[in-house]
Length: 114
Length: 112
Image (cartoon, rainbow over all chains, first blue to last red; front, side, top):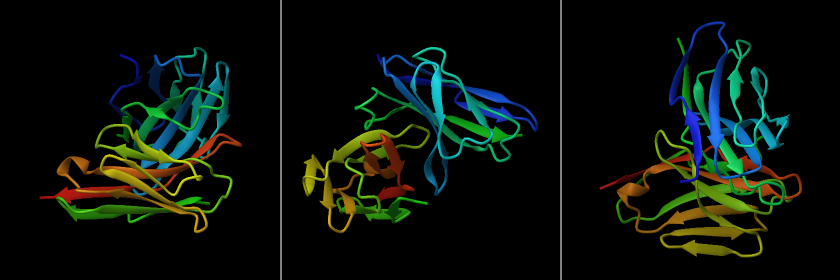
């Protein structure tokens, strides 16, 4: 059963703490993405990766970091530099170059600040 | 700069009625226009999409109407059902830079 798995479903961050959100896909997709969803603001792109060991900043990358060491995994770290981290975070994937118009999303991680 | 404007922000429709959500774009380089449906606590899922060489695409109760000259497109849900209650996002894709831009979303509620 192919898909995208995000974990955890809910995550709480303390002041000054870094937290890492997991995203794993078994769709054999080349491209992976991280989006942030806030009420009334739609989906905003944080980082994306078209191939292993390469990634690019999206529209709101400040305060976040990513890695792409394996094709199936694209973890997102929310650092202490991100002052307003409370949001619903969505990971997505697409087949790759010339087939990136269709995104497949995971079920999201809700991050809240304690 | 928001390149895809979506309205309304929220919409309440009676069961059996027609739900209409509108989007407008500015960049003429966009050449693929999908709609995503998102249920609470879930990720969005591709619902229906259209390319600019056609003016309408229908899949079951869902129809996209596309007006290239006005740079507008809309989603129509016929015979709306309570199970259609969700947030809907329009989007626009540029095959040149392979970038997908989302609208701000519409929260649709279908009441009995």
